[in-house]
Image (cartoon, rainbow, N blue to C red; front, side):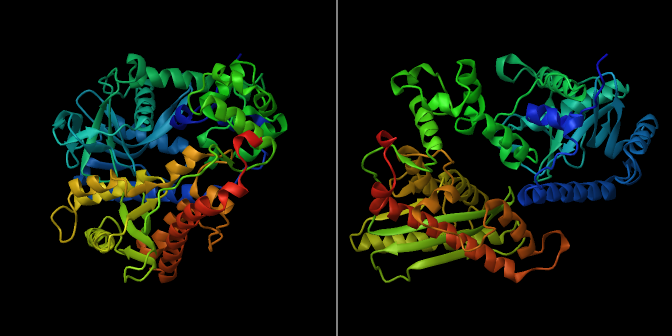
Length: 544
């Protein structure tokens, strides 16, 4: 008889191998990697966000509001939640739903709201749940009930599959204890906390015409089988394979050791492409590297070019971090050049725009210039700092043009900078110095705006990754702060502005400025290195 296991909502968006390890009795004493500081901070931020929303609801709804104590055993909290539902409580915060032994489920939900037919789950997330557009079904935050929902002509639902999976899990738990509303709706309150977005979990808007509920059932059934096999020490249904999730997974040291011992192909080709290769009998890096390039087109990979996969395997075997795709490297250059890097705090806003001015002398101080706000985000002062950045940036361009000099500006992966330039222009429209969205779009679509990440991706093979902190060391650059990372900067920012009621730490502001300066200097170093030394220092693909 199969041993029953109880799984939470997280398993449906979690790696199958991780589900195995979490339920394997032989893995209980295996050392795990410490939680990444950035992930740890996001967890803390999310908890703080849920707490602030719950406090607001409690003050707003008074006697209609019931909060389940977050301390105590899971069994006691589930008992209190069930008692609150049976008594007809209108709103139940921090609910712990009774275990569903037959279904193999356990878990809770941030908020339960009572309708005429039963309870509907609502989650509170620290990310955006809508984007500008139309079609989202929302209700005001003051009336977090599906019967008050209406179609909003200014918002569209932002795709958040994890949210819908969590809501589907809660719906099944409510069904199991006989407290569901039967309409299969679930709500989500995002970081802006101004509306509740309502998801119809029966809507066939998933790939292949599936609904969120059918997608959830398929995923949950698969993870449950993996977990039960692990609990019984049966033949594992999931083997390790490197995917994006590995980067922050506490089980990565365990999986990495096994992958390296097996010289697994996913060490150079991740995700679905690794599965495609295994299906074609290519399971190791050695087997992939031995494939003739003339046969590479047979591989049918989607995440990487077929020939690149073979060349990356060759580079991995030779411990070569970078390989040139082209004989002559080409980086667009200007007489006057500015490197740009933006620092944001999750979805709350962009608090720092850093620039490095170099090239011909136009009478402006060259080197680093920062435009920052230290008001906790979101803040109107963010608009002021963005306007000052744009004014300085525009003046540099104008001075260059007036002197007949060409101008280029550089970033590393334009998605982030473009997103926040456009968002800032929209959010702070009409404030002094803030450009229009059209002005921003005109600039970012011009040849003056150069994405160095795209250039690196097009001209190099990068077996170890293409991130700035992976590429810059090959160019001889090192960050001054040994803990420099985007994830850690989130933690430094909290201390710098005193988020969560803490004391303001001025030293963390200096730390962030140093980190940002190093980021823009890194792009400056990379493009100069590509122009001058890289062709002689980095092997060409044919050299492999």
